[in-house]
Structure formats: C-alpha cells, structure tokens
Image (tube, rainbow, N blue to C red; front, side, top):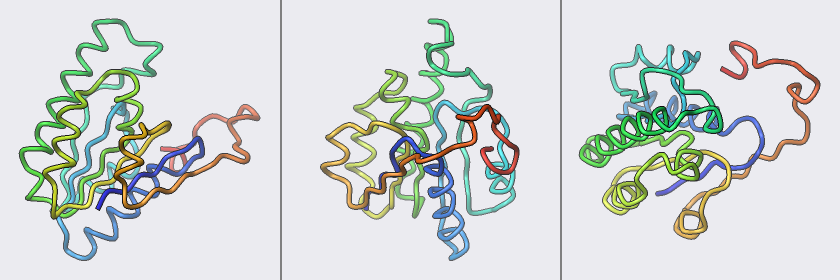
Length: 168
C-alpha cells in the first residue's frame, strides 16, 4: 500500500521512522531513501546498526533548494535518481520503502518522476511511504493512507534553532 505523510507540521519523517522501527522489529526488510538530506541525524545513526535496514542518501548536505547552485542541483539530482533507481531495481527485496522528503525533491525538479511512478507501480508486495509538503494530486489520488501533519505551534517561530534528538 502507499502511505503519504504530508503537511507543514513537524513529524512527517518521525512518523515514517516509527514505521521503520515497527517493520524492522518484526523482521521485515526496510529501505530508507532520503532526499535533500545529507547531514547526520539521530534516526539514521540508530538505524545504520540494524542488519535489515538499508539507507540511501546523498553524501553531503546541499542545503535548501533556494541556496543551491545549478551545479549543486545537477549533482543532487544525479544522486537522487541513482538512489531511486536502486529502489526500483530492488523493490521486491524490501517489505517497506521510505521515500523521505520525496515531495520536496519532486517539487524542486530534483528527481525523475517517471522512475518514481514506475517504482510505485511495480512495488506490489512492498509498502511505500512518501513524506514531504505539497504532494501532487496524482499521488494523493492513488494513496491508501494519507496523514496530514499540521503545525499549530513550533519553537522555531520564536527563534529556537533545531535541536539534536528532537528535530534531527
């Protein structure tokens, strides 16, 4: 089934990683593909130790899309497409595939949508989770689960920076 965790609130990745823990804890094989994320984070450090979880992400942090040079965008797009191709080629190996921040990459033109649609269409026995803001209608129409996470209040609005263990 296809899951979407979307919206402007904090917790989309956190919800997806909770599902990773549940699937892996039950012996399932999990692939986490992170888009637009290259900095260290607690969940990635933790899940790297598990034998039944594979993590794919770019080897550096490119920052926000509005901060990227054209060269950065070309590099990160190649990385994203390489990781998405791996997911497509190996979808049958995994019980759960997380596509974290896929909508940001898609909305920024930083990933091949044809490959993404092919992955979703071919992964019949695999749960797929897509996270990010502003999902395209195509994906919301075909999704089996959609959870919208809405921000009501966030410390960042008061000037509090992201905190280790909470936001990353």
